[in-house]
Length: 365
Ligand code: ATP
Image: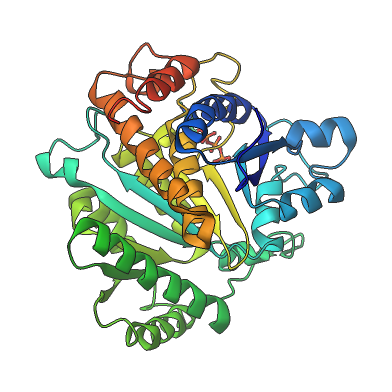
């Protein structure tokens, strides 16, 4: 069958470990979804990651990078493997190279309580959890990656915050809060998470957020120290909306967020820049369960929904927005109807979970 004329090219990088398993499951759901909405998705599989490094000597070749950069979007599984390391002892992480090289400053990590999924908190308000951590993904402490100094007596890695990136992150945060507010029918709130009481870099960041906030009078704006936020994300996570933060803080708080909504298998993410975006689950390659067919593909499936939404926003057409909404709805419906993946104590493996979601595509239409 010929592809629809509005076909977009998606670079698919399954990566390592469960990355390959959750990616296959997601493609199995995307195919019927694309057909139903008449949207064209042409998938091109590209090899990168720890095993690629072991076999070829490079984690992501220049040719692969170029192909990924030319695609309309990149869908990634997970990369890295504990025993496969670079000579300096760090893990193989070409996904970080993609973030830096493509300028993907906004790490969007939504956390939502899915119907039927057991939550860490017993409070019934935990069912209302629906917030987004916006992890700045190109600077902060991670800017030091590969640049730090280590001597016999000292190790030093420096945090970096720049005005242009912070302005972009702030605008992204307020724009996202505005769009979420329109969808949810209530006012949006941006809460910058920092450590401005100790570090001047964060006071600098606060100042820039306050300047940008002035252009978004319809969105509420506040700040919160990162340590207090760790406490409040456990005490009242339902109270938050959009939480922009520095790279390392976002890395850590994202895992806390995942813990609140069922675990890493429920944490999708998107790394978005002004021209490119990578969509991938927030989890790693999970060597402890790799190859067993029990990884939860939900985070990757929801990341794919974010991808369709992003493509729609960039003008791909209403079909993409409809497909994104239907995919999210199908995931919700599958769990509401009793899908229980192994990470939440159920018996449904990766393929069964994908099937349960795929079955609900078109079910409401
Ligand atoms: P990284 O440093 O790359 O984030 P990690 O080893 O710290 O990787 P993960 O690979 O995310 O962390 O795994 C953390 C734990 O969560 C492991 O016990 C893993 O089995 C579990 N886990 C992660 N992703 C999934 C998933 N999709 N389904 C089920 N369990 C998962």
